Image (cartoon, rainbow over all chains, first blue to last red; front, side, top):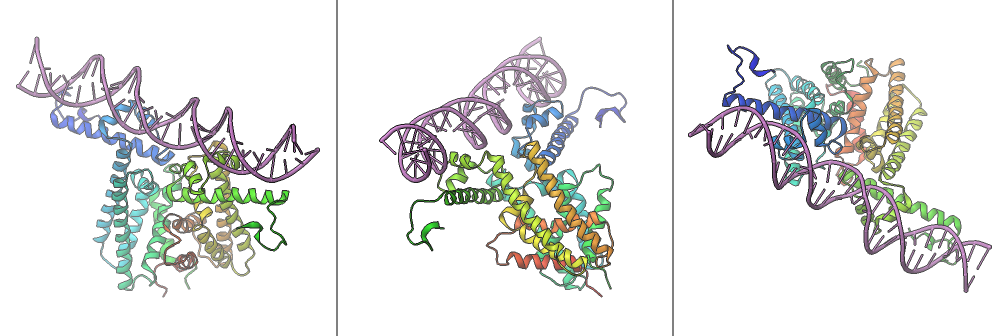
Length: 212
Length: 212
DNA sequence: AATATCATATACTCACGGGTATATTGATTG
DNA sequence: CAATCAATATACCCGTGAGTATATGATATT
């Protein structure tokens, strides 16, 4: 980043209002990234806001300066993840071809997001630590993703590109398979997220029995 | 239960040493069942041992009379779940036919166990709340299940009943899909666990694209 | 220059919940 | 019948960690 070091003639230490707002936003985001990593690694409950602060070289009250409370931190992380999923839905909807083509496109994005910090948090986190209100929003959003997935499936069944079966169970099966990397995949592994996504979607598309 | 009310001539209120041991064992198990249900519903952390006790009409120290501490309760629940998985492995290994036959058999059992109290707990619980030692045992056991699954897969690939792909990724894909019901399935739903298991395994076997 | 605002820290409060010390009752054994 | 042991309860302790009151220095505003 080093926000000010580029383009301007003299790197003045005085920031405009706009720059200050940006800086604040950047700090806020940095807190969220540090937090979500720790949530994913240790779980929400086992993550101490104090440790998150320490990992950034700041103190706990500074986090409270940027975010209301621990649940808020979690909710914001999840919101960022949800956003990625929604973008993937929109993107897949624009893909030309059969329903299966759109579904496959979506599944690959879905899988990749699940291996990313914020997406992974959406999948790994249950509603347990949330307030009633937070849990409601969370569940509604997840349901939205699920029903988008189911829409792709139904579309594909309608146009004959997907074999008929119970769309609900098929949806859960696909989502389940692609959710799982959120729990085991490590970004340092030798296979990249893209490659894993590709292989998994191929397996799910073709099935495990050999084709005649 | 009303343990003594049957078969014997006079239902004596005096129990033999053996009967007392059985009774104790039954109480211990009752605690575990009450606990695992609450763990699955609310998560380990959000489950208060006091609430578990209350759900049985007893008090917290009584739980400590039967089990060492909260982690112990969790570990015992998980051990019971793991046992079921190991039994499923043994059973599937004895199934005659192709590697795919054995795999399918195993997958169906695996899915069903994942919708049962203790099995579900194995899947839903992360290692986060455990002591180092507990986490080690837990991870070793899970790895054991995973590698049994992979063995079925490799066997099937060797005999040509399973299409070739990366066995590791295939294993994760199958396990992920079948793990997911541990998070959404409710025993009160209109479709039974057996039926869900059957349909999911069929989907995974055949793939979602229609066969030519 | 005076004042308000922002970013940050130190040092605190307080509820919650895991775990324990201890008393009580009733059955078991010598 | 005394002594012991098992099962259970009440009442407590105490660590932990979320969240806060408050101080301070720096920057911005008038």
